[in-house]
Image (tube, rainbow, N blue to C red; front, side, top):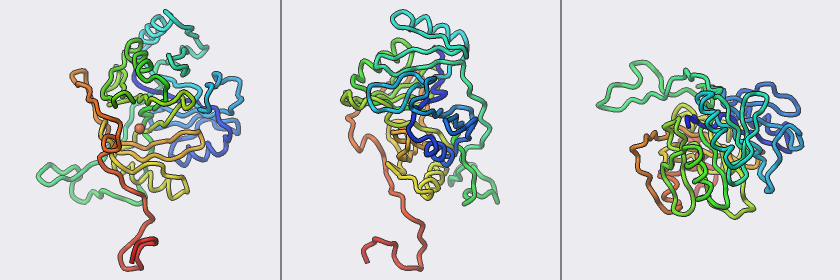
Length: 315
Ligand SMILES: [Fe+2]
């Protein structure tokens, strides 16, 4: 099953204007946005879609408080779409929607869509680094940092669900949709990637009590560590609340910075995730702080030596 990854996440929300402001400030491009919602696109066309909670065009809400209404996967071609329809049609309803996509539920009740992917080619330079002893990543007179540098979320990377039975949930994605498990936290969570990407994970499942079922966070890749830090710094400066980060994960090696959001879950900037192929053997570790990050920093206001000590510091 040549599934590439999430193309779009659809939310039914209480406060459309707050979400419009949030995702615009996050750096996504608003497309067809009105007071009833719209789409917010990354550079490659992957997106977040916002609608009012009572919008009749949305799939029905989950029994919990999650605002996520649908996860739409991008697949390589029509053949994959047909194969998914046949596979899932063996034991559940598969709807064919007028736009050519299909819709079905996973084993935990999350509504999934599948469509021939909207992803466009990304033409954005990666972060270039100069390392002594190596060929320069940036030649003479090429500056590495600028306060005015433009960064955009490049692509929707991954989504994380709280699920009441992560083993059963993982099995559905692996056995029915061909996802691979790259790493796992013992009895607590599996990192999964579909066959059409080498990214460490596009889906992570975390075991929780049933009342918490829903989306925990989702993430857009940016161009590199500097972009994570600079995007996060700017977002915090706009008044958005940092939840976790900046730091660097252990499983996946991705740099991260998470923020609270008005869609009831966290939203993450990340960069430089590990790639894996089928020769990789999944690691397993207990779900503890040392396994969740290699290092973690705390955001501070800007400061420069010469003035008084930073506010709150011991003198
Ligand atoms: Fe993440």
